[in-house]
Structure formats: structure tokens, C-alpha cells
Length: 312
Length: 325
Image 1 (cartoon, chains in turn purple, yellow):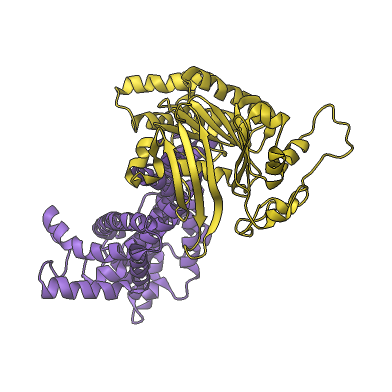
Image 2 (cartoon, helix red, strand yellow):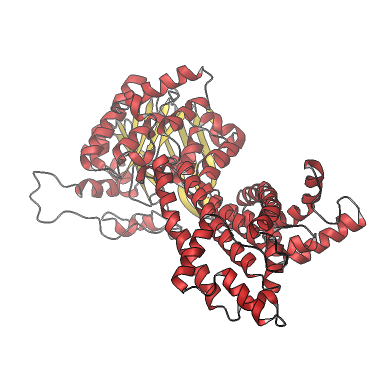
């Protein structure tokens, strides 16, 4: 088991290295002069030269590459062009909010989506199944900013049940603030996960071992949850991984509508302001998350499915 | 005669709309006595598996069952659906055809056998664990203490079929239904699995309903044989009578197509034609198109099961005539 994790971890390192290299190349071939971008078109040529010198932009490319890698390994991403705050600080300030939102919304999405999917799968082509089909269709088609705005108008502005914006302070206030944005994302996720669960469970319930479970005298609930869902978890855990990644990087609209701090917002602002150090750090961080989530999912597979354990 | 353990009466299995049903089993009637081993024989598509699954009501959801299946005098088809789990596994155990896919791949075999006990009997966990080991030993699993925590993927087909048998026998059912338990296995393993089942039968004194298309298997292990063709029971006799004096032309054809060592024929006998798809024969005897003894009457009316001797019945107009004559 530990060997398998180490092996997977070993796999992740070259990937991370590759990502860093790609980011380096991308930043160098982007049109425009970083110095100009940082100081603006009105900047004094002396200042520009000074800036290039300070950022190491005059060094030969291979040397720049080595500096770049060394900085990345030390998690030193430089300072923001705009606010002059260390990028690491900016990320440290925003990331926890995004992670919190991701965890809460994915959990809520699972708690809604999996029971929906099981309920629909066991009532195939009957009203509950059709209801899920319609729910999923809406969930797939509705834009997140639109759903966020509707929920905000109904529950915050009209009913006044939830605060309108911000992240709140302290655990309970924070939870109060996060419920509505998380609910927005959870509704979209549950549409996806409900569909996925339905398909996987239906597939599994047709298997011979499910009939064996029934022949033993297992009641339907046990057949579905013990034998059905456990086996359906494999494709489902892939879906959960994708969903986590999508929320980490794709909750910008929700963060904007609810005016929450978060990594998505940080990045969008950085892109519109050409704040290269922040963009660069953000891209690296997302790549890191993709690798991390995939790694965790690989380990989860091993726990869910003993067949993978036997092969490794 | 004492009451049989299992008494199937006029069982019909229908698929499709009620207005235009597709009938895959027609008025199936036969019995299995306590401790008796009965073979249910027929080609694929003859409805034998559907009949077996009907006993535990494990047929696909779209199937409709009618008739009576009396088990210990109780009609299983009349039981409320929620009472069936009490019968399954506890009163009647079942072994399926496909050992490779009939076990849950993500549960240890021990947990799967244990579940069968857990569902029907209350006992301390340690005792249950011991029972699982005993069952594995009973079905001839080598080194059961170590193998109990292994997953199905770590076993061969023959070993998995032993695990299936252990599951089916976990609560000492009085009836074991085995649906082609050896079909997916190598010949050498087949013999081992059959020997194991007979050994279990003798030790626990259970009745066995063995579904197979292999006449060699039934000759070896069964006391009585029920032959099915295209959804009908066509002959029912004790094993000696059936092999020495088969009365239905289909059974006769089946027996002729079994190769023997002393065979001098150049070519193996085969019954001409093939089994008609379910629903295509709506009138008369389903075997008539392939039958060497067919009469005009066969096209009009399905022959009833006629007693041919003690414990011997067959459904054929031609032999019914011979019996009278």
C-alpha cells in the first residue's frame, strides 16, 4: 500500500516539473514586455532597465530557467506588480476561502446527488427517474452566475435568511456566509453526480453478484447500498475528483456574485491587470492541485477496489 | 406418498405486454422430494433457468409468473414480495452458472459467506467467523483460515464455485438449486465440484435441483430427471427409466446424440432443426417440426403429460398411443 503511494508520488514529480517548464516557456513567449506591463507605458527608460535588471530579465534564458525553478521550489513567487505584496501572501490569504467553498459545496453536492441517483436508478423510467432527468438537464444548462444571482435575490435580498456578501469571521458566521454560495455550486454538482450515480448504479445492479446477494436473502436496501453502491463508487470517485478540480478553478463566478475572496477572483483580477507573477503562481498552483487530486483519487481507488491492489 | 418438498404446479413465465404475452415457460409442473436430487435438463433457451429462478422469484423484473410453487406446502408465488428474503438463502440456497461474475469483486469471500449467515441467524461474531471457516472446509477449500480474507479475483473458477456453494449452504437450506454449476468450468474441475455438491448433500441431507444441459452429469448424480423443451416439460422419469426407456422423441434424440466409447456410427446423431424461438409456436407440440414420429394431431393440440409407468410421465401423442395400444 505504502509502496503504491510512493510509486504514484514518484509519478507526480516529473509531471510537476513538466508543468513548471511549460509555465516558464509560456511566460517568455507571451507578447509584451513584463517590465512595461509592470510599470506602465509612461515609465521612464531608466526605471525600465532597472526593473529588468532586478527581475533578472537580462540574464541568458537557461540561467533564468534555473532561477525560476529554484524560486518555485522555495515557493518564492515574487511580488505582485500591482500591490507589491508577496504573491505567496496573496495566495495564502485567498486559498483557504476557495478550499473551504470547494469542500462544503462538494460535500453538499454528494449528499444531494448520490441519493438522487440511487433513488432514480431503482425507479427507472418512473416519475422519480424523470424528475432527476429534468433536474439534471437544468443543472447542466443553467450558468452558475445566473443561479447564484437568483439564489442571492431570493434568499438574501427578499427572505433575508443569508448575508449578502463577504466571507464572514469565525466558524459560525463563516458557515452562514458560505451556505448560499456552496448551495449554488452544490446544485450544479448534484445534477452531474446524480446522473453519474444513476448510470453507475444501474450498470452495477444488472450484474450477477447483485443477483447472488438477492439469492442470499438480502433485502433491497442492503443489495443497493452494500453491493450496488460500493461497486458503483469507482466511476463515481473519478467524477468526484473532476468535480473538486472544477470547483477549485471554476468558482470565479460564484465568488464574484457573492463578493467572496478566493483564488478564482484573485486570478481573474490578475489577468485583467496583467499581474504576471500572480498569474504564474496561480497556474502553477492549479497544476499542483490537479496532480494532488489525481494522486488522492488513485489512492482512493485502491481502497474501493481490491482488484487494483492485487495488480500493483 | 409424503408431500414433496417442492411442488411446482402449472408455472407460466410471461414477458411483454399482457395483451400479447411472450411465454417462455408453459404450465411447468414437477416435484422435488426431500433429500432427492432432481436434474432439470434441456437445451439453452428451453426455459430451465427461468423455471429455476422463478422458485426464488429472482426472474427479471419484466417477467410475470403465474401458477403455484409450493415449498413445504406454502405457495411462494402468493407470498408478499417482502417475505421472499426470508426464504432465499435460508430455506432454499442457489448456486449460479457464472462463478466468475457471481461474486462481489470488492468484498472478501469470507465477508460474502458471512453475510449469508448474518441475514438469517443471530450468533456472536466469533462463532459466525468459525462457521465461515467450517463452510469453506466443507466445500473443500484448501487452507480456509488464510483464504477467508481473499477477494474473488484471487481465485480460479472452480474455487469460486466452491465459495458460491459455501454461500448457498451457509444456512443449511433444505433445497439447493444449482443452475449449471459446472458449465463454465474445466472438465476436471467439473468432476470435483459435482463430487463436492454430492458430498454436501449427503452430509446435510438437502434436496438438489440441478439445472444442466449435460446428460452425463445428470446420469451420474441425479435420481430423477425432468426434461424441458421450448418452455414445456416433455418428460419426467427416474434416471434408470429415462436412460433405458425414454418415451418422448426429444429425449430419445438427446440420448442418441450422446457419444459413447463403443459407438460404431460414422457420424454422431443430431436432432434435425433447432429450438424454435419463444413465442413462435402458439399451437400444438413445439417439437413437431423436428419430430420423427409426428402425427396430424401434433399440429393442433399440445399433448398432455401422460403416465407411462411408475414415476414416469411424458407429453407426446405418438407414445401416448403406444402406451394405450
